[in-house]
Image 1 (cartoon, rainbow, N blue to C red):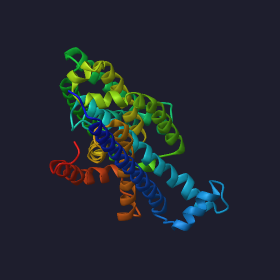
Image 2 (image 1 turned 60 degrees about the horizontal axis):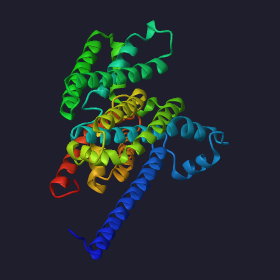
Image 3 (image 1 turned 45 degrees about the vertical axis):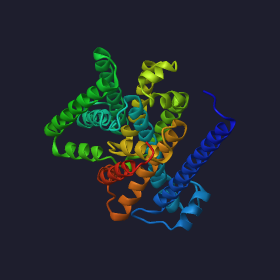
Length: 354
């Protein structure tokens, strides 16, 4: 079958228009994220006008006005940047997980990774007095380690039963219920003071963010980015199905194994410092695919940006509705995630990009 030159030119023009539209989506999303970041810096218990935030950013952390410098650089800036990093980690992890498992409901939260982190943090909080390490170090370390253990459990169960997407999903659900039950047991056994700390951690809050946690989370994200970029085409090919991907020479099992490890690292980095954050890793990939389609060169960065927008937007909303006692972002994302998911489902049902 011969394809006419005019048809080839038409296909090229269509591809260029689609790429241009996707690039515009990325640019608009970046502008929205920057706007939300600025808004997050201006809101809080002691609100700062935009002009003072601008002067404070120009003056730096050692500016002449020590009050503004302290509020901006030591309190709000770490929280805002942590929101961006955590949202990006969860958005990337969610899209990759949905791709390798061929399951639109897959996310770090629904497959037990976040529950495992919560159990690790609760365990560290409960026995913090017995560990000669400061709680601000041992809690995220325990959450990180337990997330990796959960990843190993899921993959081990899948390997023993055949590492198909269906088995991985079932193993993840089993791990989710196991760690949730262990969380409940610890909460039942904990004293009232310890229980309050555990519950606050499980809510998910950016108030825990420090420059140290920002640095650690940022370094893990940067370390994972090269692997994400390298598997971009492989993940796009996986959307054609395992059989078609193998026929094109792709080692499906190897891609799935490597991506699963990257997802575990991204999830651990995200939830270890700020607590359990639901719905971001589920919603952001759907929004990204609805806007730019299945080409992972565009959907992966857009999912990261959308995840960051959701989390920073949740931070802004929590500060606006309760300036005196900031509502944890985990509660905001859990409540807002339901209508957002309904909106995505409705848009896809009306013929949105699949």
